[in-house]
Length: 404
Ligand code: ADP
Ligand code: ASP
Ligand code: MG
Image 1 (cartoon, rainbow, N blue to C red):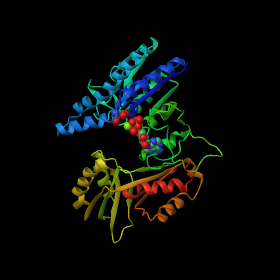
Image 2: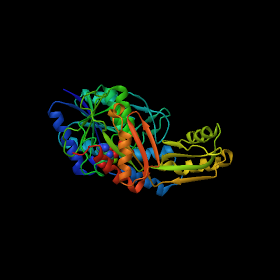
Image 3: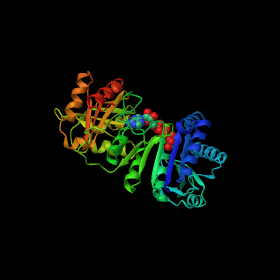
Image 4: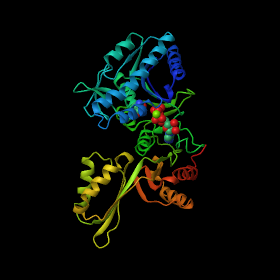
C-alpha cells in the first residue's frame, strides 16, 4: 500500500464534471489499495478573477486582506472535491492550510513555509478518510491567513508529501507531463518520461510554468519522489529523478520560451567602481528580481548596462535607475517589454561543445537577432524580440532533434 499526495488545480478542477472525475480517480486509487491525500488549488482561472476583483475594488489592497481573499479560491475548490468524494462513498475531510498545520512567515502574498504539523491530516488518514487540503496557504506566526504565491499549491503538495513520509507526490495538470517545449508552441513537443531535478529546476527558473519552481526545490532538497502527469488521460507522466548518467543522455532536454521578462538599458554610465553596486543594491532592496545583466566594453570611461526583470517589476526598476541617473552619470534609461528569453536546458551540454554555436546559427538562419546571452553549466539563454519567440522555439526544437 502506497501513500500518495495528489495535487489538482486550475483546469483539472475547472467545473463540476472535472471535480467528479477527480473524485472518481481518487476512488479508483483507493480501490487499488493506495492511501490518498489531496491538495487542491483554485478552480479554473479563479485566482486571476479574485485578483482582478481586488483591483476593481481597491487601490491599496492590504496584503493581509488580499491573502484572505485569494485563499478562499482554494477553500471553495476543496469543499467541492470533498462533496464529490462523499457522493461516491469515499469518506473525506477538507482542511484549510492552517488546519493542515502549515505555519508560515508573515510575508503576505509570497509566504514561506516555516513548519508543518499535519496532525489532523494524519488523524484523517489513520481513520481511513481522504484528507483534502487547500493549497498555497497557511497561517503566519502572527496568526493571519497567508498565501504562498502563484503556483504555491505545488509547493504545498511536495512539502506535505515530505512531512507525511509519502511514497510519491503526483502533480496532476492539463498536459501529460513535462515536455521538450511548451506544447502550445510546438505541436510536435514530446513528453519526457523522466528528467533530472537540476534540469527541471533550471527550466522552471527560466519560465517553464509547470511545476512551480519552489516545489521542485523542496522536492530536491528533501528527496520527494515527484511525478508530473495528466488529470485528463491519467497516463504515466514524467518522473523527476536524480541526475542520470547514461550513454544515451540527450545533450539538450528542452527549449523554454519566456515572454514575461522585460529589459532595462541604462546608457552613458560612468565606468568606475561602485556604479553597478549602487544600482543593483537599490534594485535588490526594492525586491526587484534581476536576471540577466550585460555591461558593454567601455569607451572613454562611459559604458551601457542592460538587465532583465519580470514584467511586473519593470516600472519600479526604471524608476530606481532614473532616480540614480545623476549619481552614476547615466544619460538615459529605456524600458523594453517586447522581449523574449529563449533557453536551452540539458545536463549533456556540460560535456558536449558546440551547443552555443548551433543555437546562434539556428537563430541567425531565421534572421533572429540576439540581444543578450547568459549561460549556466546546463543552460544557454538568449534575449530576442518577443514577436520572434514562437519561431525561435520551433527552430531550436527542430535543430536539436527534440521533436517526436
Ligand atoms: P496547473 O494549473 O495544472 O497548475 P499550469 O496551467 O500552471 O498548470 O501549467 C500547465 C501548462 O504549462 C500546460 O498547459 C502547458 O501548456 C504549459 N507548459 C509550458 N511549457 C511546458 C513544458 N515544457 N512542459 C509541460 N507543460 C508546459
Ligand atoms: N491558485 C493559485 C494560483 O493560481 C495557487 C496555485 O494554483 O498553485 O497561483
Ligand atoms: Mg494553472
